[in-house]
Amino acid sequence: MPLIVLPTSQLLWVRVAALLFTCVAFSVAAHGGGLSHGGMSDWCIFCWAFSFACTLLVLLVELFGLQVRAPVSWSNFPITVACYASLLCLSASVIFPLFFLKDQRFYGNVRDHRIASTVFSCLAAVAYMGEVSLTKARPGEVAGYMATAPGLMKVCQTFVACIIFILVSDPVSYDQHAALKWCMAVYCICFILSMAVVVLCVGECTGCLPIPFSKFLSAYGLLAVIMYLTATIIWPVFQFDKHYQRRSQVTSKLIAVAVLTALNFLLYLADLAYTARLVFVSA
Image 1 (cartoon, helix red, strand yellow):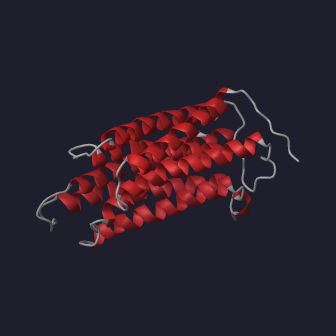
Image 2 (cartoon, rainbow, N blue to C red):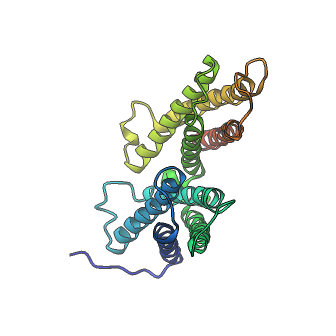
Image 3 (cartoon, rainbow, N blue to C red):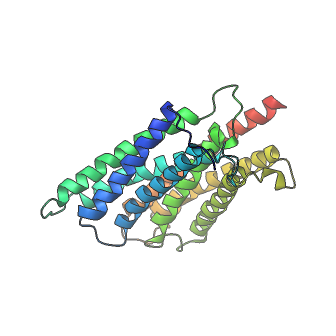
């Protein structure tokens, strides 16, 4: 039987705090928030519940000393979970008050429950950011790829792409021109490749590639930068230019997609710069 190990480290207390904050956030919202099923309410509950479950898993594995038996790379898995959880809780902290506090009519203690969920969601996001800061790779330190700046940027790239998918799907806003379909193809291809890198690193399968992992990262990074550069230019041109525009008005979702496309382009550009520096300096 494995012995229970109770390390009293700063990282442990940060994880416990994140666990408690996410538990309170989704419990209060589900119990007294008066939320209807579907839409953004389900998204916020998912963000908190997913983060809680993954953090609980990480804590149990480390407390029981089961890292060696885990079927994933333990140098990559916890920080990947923490980075995704910080982004999820951050998005819930923004979405929940916008959709369920602003300009809403409340009955009983519903408003208090929703305010409490928002506050604890913000605290959870801060706790997860603290965990990422504590576990990320330091200069000269040997660590897993996901603990490095390019690895963390892969997580951000996939998360931003998911937000773009949500925005362009309801209503569908990429089927008016072939150029906009190309933008959608860019989002999908780059998301799949970035997520593949995350899965390969967490699953310790980077050696399964037919080419060296560093060369794959460099080639894919360059391709992603070029593709996102085209999407950054094409999307606003074909959505906002009156010559191509087929809608009566420009919605906030279309503007948000344009901003997020530019953000992901900058993330891929920074990722490529970091990767090139790591490859060429190490060479």
